[in-house]
Image (tube, rainbow, N blue to C red; front, side, top):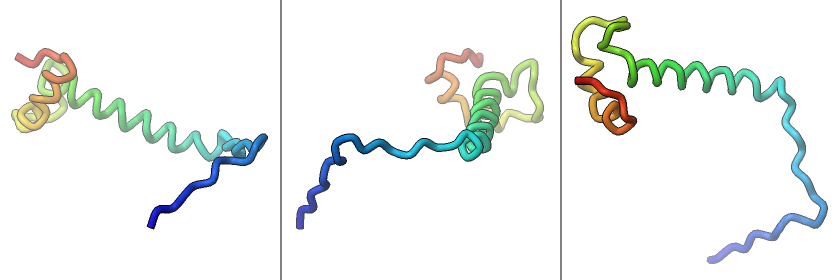
Length: 71
């Protein structure tokens, strides 16, 4: 069966979200993005934190896709 969704009523606005509820999630997402950027862009180079080449091999195609040189 097809269901129809009624459009929002005229003048109805969504309730604003307080900054206190968004801030922890935004901080978590920001830190996660920085860690991912580090692993894709800099790991296995001059700033390597992990020994070996496993991280490089797992992220090799992603590096090329994002334009990071790796060899």
